[in-house]
Length: 240
Length: 240
DNA sequence: TTTACGAAGGGTACTGGGTACCATAGGATC
DNA sequence: GATCCTATGGTACCCAGTACCCTTCGTAAA
Image (cartoon, rainbow over the protein chains, first blue to last red):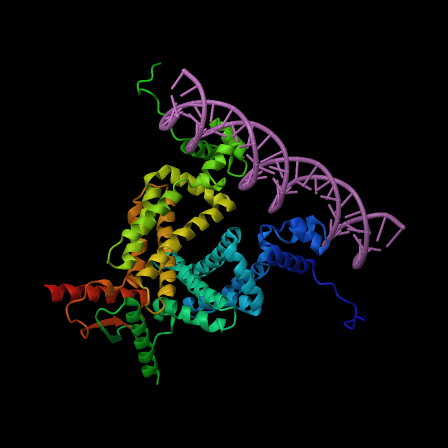
């Protein structure tokens, strides 16, 4: 057989290791696969594995480190818009990483559901995303009362909503529209926490008021949705 | 010297181990203390340690398992009130556990800040609280649209707010009022997510409305506070 | 009193992740 | 060709966690 791809550029060892590891994990389970098995399968030395992955768990999530760096860069470059929108967009960066490799993500989801150690590891990764978002929000609100509290609560909400949408998509076998699922989930957070104050206010609008009417007894989150809708409509009206 | 306490009832081995472990952790650090050190200090066999603590990390948080059981029982016994209030009260159960031993909690906080492994372990514990709360909320809202999503987001918010207040208290050296700190933090969550619908509505109030006036451009969370205040006032008025 | 039994603790050997330290090879640079 | 630097390999070790079996002791039944 001939190799028509020219001089075969060998793929980076990190990828080789991650693939070998994942194949073995799917075949005989995470815990019943030793690092020695992995390096034997990849044909490299044991020492090399730990050069590329600080722990066995890391080999299951080979892209998170890069994604976390992406998110940090994204938020550092974020402009003056609504900070809550920015962190929602940041969450979508993570989603995109999952959505890029649907079958891999779905298989890995099955793995993490079974292995407590992987669940814990994933928690620690998710926590770093959350801290990154909370740090951004806190910087944006620096000086405001309760900035840290609001930042942490909103970051936690965004992460929870994102994960809800993501898991829903993963459970469906990665067949639906991941983005739509997550957008729907994030909508709830944006409706409640999205800050109208961050939109450029109409000039000299300090004393303008809106009037909102809502059925008494409605859940608060529906009231909030109406408030936001009213604010949007009002904006549109005054700008028209 | 005489022992005037009568027949000295030896304290349970679990407590002996936890105390010996914590003393050593504070003295030379978590990672530089081996399980062999602990059992030698406690004067028992190595095997006994793992009978009482599934891992070395567990010895640092000896009360979480009991507290988690308490929370589960508390939520199972919770009545028909506002579910969000119930999970806020559930969070206060956790706080109470910390507040019962201030100096221990503060010292342990220093430990967990330093040791990544302990941070990760704590994350996994916190996650179990969060899952317990989310499960309760979802059951209470069974059948409602987006029940799971709202349950997860609100549980995450409550946990984040609780942790914010708790950490603030821990950083102060455990000297202030932990309950007040956490109440203040939870107030933000309750203002946004507390469901007016769960309060017994005025009879035949289906089509009643409230009118709310707020400065346009105000942050959404302030708007929400006003909405809730308006609802409270309206209730008081109609009942008077 | 003796025997049976079950709970609490102990001991030993092993697995396997993770680290420290050193050795080696290959390519680039001077 | 000598000198680095980087990528990789190898060996030995530490220690958490597990499997398996043993001892002890108090209690209850015989």
